[in-house]
Length: 287
Image (cartoon, rainbow, N blue to C red):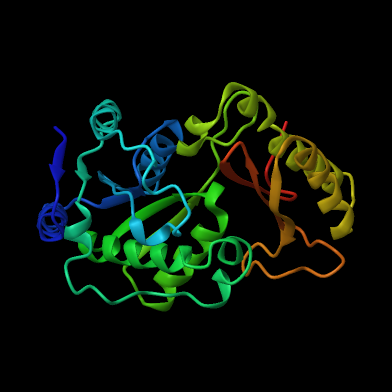
């Protein structure tokens, strides 16, 4: 039976009781508007040994910039709860903003080097908000295995680094991107797309597929790989924030030659919606 809790101490008491009863806790942090990609993370923590699953639903104001979509971000808690019930989630944690950030809140968690480029450059306050809220989720949940989708690749690496640096008792998983049949990465923001923009949005996947195919055929020149990924995106999208190859672990620029398992990352805007996607070169199979 699904339990819904709303306060940090209530979540902590719930997970402590689960562990005391011999259960291993899995955590899936989300901002709601759930879809099949989120449910794949529920399965991922189970596959990693979790016997009870906590899923958080919280639209985190700290990770939105002043001109971003916080006010219109989809909030669909009743539908989210039904999906969680259907997939056997045990606990949904759905706090209000004032419970997460009570009056006088002034403490933040930051990971420095990993957050400077890419999303950090495009959204300067974003990662401080992400690491702060996830640190709070980890603290309230306690020892657990936590799953994050690799669509938000830089976020995954940043949270992995945070947990390691701060000795948090959390196993952080980075899970494969779940895609629509036409290749578009599943995202809660996809529901913003008008039909015309939805069709054009597949250009990101086509660009990543072209670069991945070239890499598989032996192409290692970073400039050429980026050119292949960028061409289709530039034709279909209104603007591009970045199309770049980076190191898989540290997200550093690779120089002129891409190493095995470098990551190609894309962020672009179409019709007022910002989409991100990526592919690990030599590892992800894009067909």
